[in-house]
Length: 167
Image (cartoon, rainbow, N blue to C red):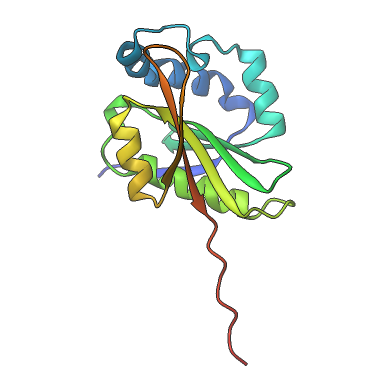
């Protein structure tokens, strides 16, 4: 009988596993762009601990192993910023990325600051990411050239406001 993947709030005890997963998961992105100096591969344990303290960080666990992670926060303009969505390579293409994305959106909706939209970005060659985000309701809002070989694609999704129940 297989174990279920559980999504929960990350704890201080998860930092090393998140950092290792991030390093493993972003290798394909580094290879795609020929750049191993990208932030997810150079982030330190101390920087990750600071993010844990100031942002919503969720992990997907399979038993004791962290097999996915995502981070988010609500900025001063009421935009839910989402980044560093990563799923272990052996767990990809099973819907876990979509589950993590939905979970962090739910978490951001509960933030003390009201959120009116979600925003994230990915590289222009990251077609799997772009497909996932489109399936989750995100639409491209901007493409910004960073270098000759890299453009960041910004995507947004409006926060759906629940319909008021009729009395």
